[in-house]
Amino acid sequence: MAILFASATDDPTPWREGFAAELPGLDFRVWPARGNAADIDCALVWQPPAGALRDLPNLEILYALGAGVEHVLADPDLPRGVPLVRLVDPGLTAGMTEFVVMRVLHYHRRMPEYEAAQREKSWRPLPQKLPQDRRVGILGLGVLGRAAATALLGLGLDVAGWSRTPKSIDGVKSLCGEDGLFALLERSEILVCLLPLTRETEGVLDATALGALPDGACVINAARGGHVVDADLLAALDSGRVAAATLDVFTQEPLPPEHPYWTHPKVTVVPHAAAYAQPKTGVKTIADNLRRHRAGQRLRDVVDVKQGY
Ligand code: NDP
Ligand code: OXD
Image (cartoon, rainbow, N blue to C red; front, top):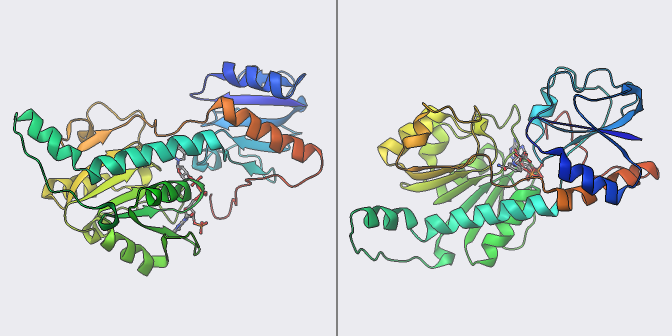
């Protein structure tokens, strides 16, 4: 068995070391040094470099080194009929939960207003809402959305979520479909996007959706840049309809220097760093799944290619 590691951004060293400990004797190759491509039965990829997935005749598993897979599905050399598995991993989930909680609390506790007051050297204590009176909406109640919802609920916030199929999470209002989307938006003082980027979700945060939010809502996008129509968000920020936005993901990454988000006073730019695939936990997750496959058991976390996530 040989693994091909092909990532545009990840350092292979900790993954190589982790796999050497977890699966001793594993032949771990790093793109572009594929060696004999016929040996490779698993490819571990993130934004696969051009050609990395071409002509792998014995590939049995294509493993995405992250939760979102739209970049793998878009590869022109995507091997047909090979299961695509995504990383569902405690390290990644913990990172995203921290990020969402951090930014939701930032807005819940009105930190942008205190930061503005500090710039004016103005001592301006503001009224505080009880957590149960703060409505948070989460787009996407999958692995990451559910974990974030549960953590926010644990802080006492009033949490609702939107998903394709109904969910039953104690204390979280579950909404689905077009009507559900607007019901969620209308109640969300703080909106968090944790959707996969698919044909159905692209551009979901457009002028109509942003216009449905309560006045002065805050938006946190930790999913993909393609979920937001940038011109519509900028207009909503400029009009005051949206009070602030935290953006971790962008249509073009790195965000070009001339992009208005960089200097917008109401926008916090984070360089796609909400949650990383962590070798320390990720190697074990992947190795366990590979062992299942070898033992003839069903792989976990296989992507539904038709749905796109
Ligand atoms: P999951 O596949 O576990 O969850 C996706 C959720 O979105 C599900 O609840 C799903 O509904 C819902 N959904 C999908 N399509 C629709 C639709 N058309 N309408 C309504 N709901 C929909 O994904 P994860 O939670 O693991 O990850 C979510 C995304 O987060 C990733 O795809 C990735 O883009 C992003 N991400 C970003 C990171 C970062 O650092 N910024 C790090 C990791 C992930 P249902 O449950 O009914 O299927
Ligand atoms: C992911 C990401 O999808 O890091 O895992 O964006």
